[in-house]
Amino acid sequence: EAQVTQNPRYLITVTGKKLTVTCSQNMNHEYMSWYRQDPGLGLRQIYYSMNVEVTDKGDVPEGYKVSRKEKRNFPLILESPSPNQTSLYFCASARTSEYNEQFFGPGTRLTVL
Amino acid sequence: GDSVTQMEGPVTLSEEAFLTINCTYTATGYPSLFWYVQYPGEGLQLLLKATKADDKGSNKGFEATYRKETTSFHLEKGSVQVSDSAVYFCALSNAGNNRKLIWGLGTSLAVNP
Image (tube, rainbow over all chains, first blue to last red; front, side, top):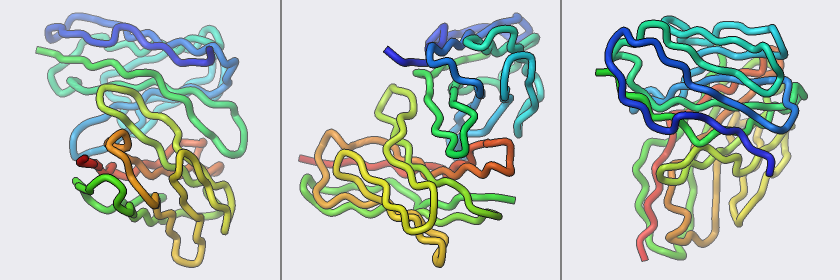
């Protein structure tokens, strides 16, 4: 089944404790992206990757890191999480085609205390 | 920059009622337009898309027509069901903008039996 998977689905952590949210897709998509969803703010892009070893900042990259060592994986790293990073996070992938239909993972709900 | 404006919710309808959710956009060039749906507790799913002016996207009884003259992409369904209760997001993608999806804030729909 074609899908984007994220882990964990739910995470409660404390300020400053490094964490990684994994994202993996099995559709051989070149493009991958991370979004966060917050009430009243909608979805905002954190980072994206056009292909392996190519990553770039989105609209709200501060406090986040990513890597793209393999085509299928695009982990999101919070080196020192803070409470303002409490949010619902989505990973997405797409073919690098003109129309950019993106496929989303199920989301990771992160709470930073 | 590019932007998407959706009508605010929540929208509450009775089963079998007609649904319209308005979406207008501002963009340079010729963006692709999308409607995504988010069911409670789930990730986002593509509902329909249109890639050029006058295209009509359709899926599951929902329709939307890409109107360049009014810069609109309104979502319609002739007869809603309880199972259509969800949050609906209008989005655009512009190839000249690193393929980033620009999102509306979402419209919550509740359908009562």
